[in-house]
Length: 76
Image (tube, rainbow, N blue to C red; front, side):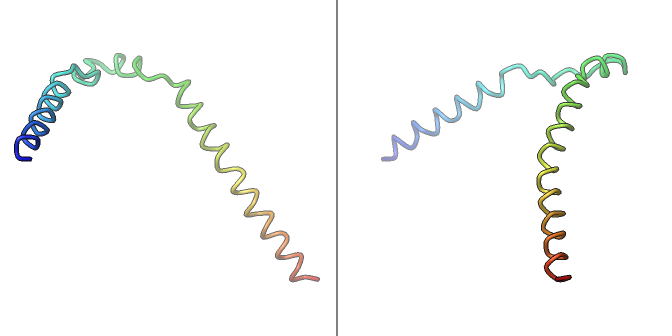
Protein backbone atom coordinates (compact mmCIF):
# COMPACT_ATOMS: atom_id res chain seq x y z
CA UNK A 1 0.00 0.00 0.00
CA UNK A 2 2.88 2.32 0.73
CA UNK A 3 4.26 1.92 -2.80
CA UNK A 4 0.91 2.73 -4.42
CA UNK A 5 0.70 5.93 -2.37
CA UNK A 6 4.21 6.86 -3.46
CA UNK A 7 3.29 6.18 -7.08
CA UNK A 8 0.20 8.37 -6.79
CA UNK A 9 2.16 11.20 -5.23
CA UNK A 10 4.82 10.93 -7.92
CA UNK A 11 2.17 11.06 -10.64
CA UNK A 12 0.55 14.09 -9.01
CA UNK A 13 3.91 15.81 -8.72
CA UNK A 14 4.59 15.18 -12.40
CA UNK A 15 1.19 16.60 -13.36
CA UNK A 16 1.79 19.71 -11.26
CA UNK A 17 5.22 20.18 -12.81
CA UNK A 18 3.78 19.92 -16.32
CA UNK A 19 0.95 22.30 -15.53
CA UNK A 20 3.26 24.90 -14.03
CA UNK A 21 5.64 24.66 -16.98
CA UNK A 22 2.87 25.38 -19.51
CA UNK A 23 2.98 28.93 -20.91
CA UNK A 24 0.28 31.27 -19.71
CA UNK A 25 -1.63 33.81 -21.79
CA UNK A 26 -1.32 36.29 -18.92
CA UNK A 27 2.41 35.89 -18.42
CA UNK A 28 3.35 39.15 -20.19
CA UNK A 29 1.71 42.42 -19.17
CA UNK A 30 0.71 44.88 -21.91
CA UNK A 31 3.31 47.57 -22.50
CA UNK A 32 0.99 50.51 -23.19
CA UNK A 33 -2.59 51.54 -22.55
CA UNK A 34 -3.46 51.04 -26.22
CA UNK A 35 -2.22 47.44 -26.01
CA UNK A 36 -4.42 46.88 -22.99
CA UNK A 37 -7.55 48.40 -24.57
CA UNK A 38 -6.94 46.53 -27.81
CA UNK A 39 -6.92 43.23 -25.94
CA UNK A 40 -10.40 43.82 -24.43
CA UNK A 41 -13.34 42.73 -26.57
CA UNK A 42 -16.17 45.11 -25.68
CA UNK A 43 -18.71 43.12 -27.71
CA UNK A 44 -18.45 40.32 -25.16
CA UNK A 45 -18.86 42.80 -22.30
CA UNK A 46 -22.14 44.04 -23.82
CA UNK A 47 -23.28 40.48 -24.37
CA UNK A 48 -22.51 39.67 -20.75
CA UNK A 49 -24.53 42.65 -19.53
CA UNK A 50 -27.48 41.59 -21.69
CA UNK A 51 -27.22 38.03 -20.38
CA UNK A 52 -27.30 39.23 -16.78
CA UNK A 53 -30.29 41.47 -17.54
CA UNK A 54 -32.07 38.55 -19.22
CA UNK A 55 -31.54 36.49 -16.07
CA UNK A 56 -32.71 39.22 -13.68
CA UNK A 57 -35.81 40.48 -15.54
CA UNK A 58 -37.99 37.36 -15.00
CA UNK A 59 -37.18 37.40 -11.28
CA UNK A 60 -38.07 41.10 -11.07
CA UNK A 61 -41.31 40.61 -13.00
CA UNK A 62 -42.30 37.68 -10.76
CA UNK A 63 -41.59 39.75 -7.66
CA UNK A 64 -43.64 42.69 -8.91
CA UNK A 65 -46.49 40.41 -10.04
CA UNK A 66 -46.60 38.73 -6.64
CA UNK A 67 -46.72 42.08 -4.87
CA UNK A 68 -49.52 43.21 -7.21
CA UNK A 69 -51.60 40.08 -6.52
CA UNK A 70 -51.06 40.31 -2.77
CA UNK A 71 -52.15 43.97 -2.77
CA UNK A 72 -55.21 43.03 -4.80
CA UNK A 73 -56.13 40.28 -2.32
CA UNK A 74 -55.64 42.58 0.69
CA UNK A 75 -57.76 45.29 -0.92
CA UNK A 76 -60.68 42.97 -1.68
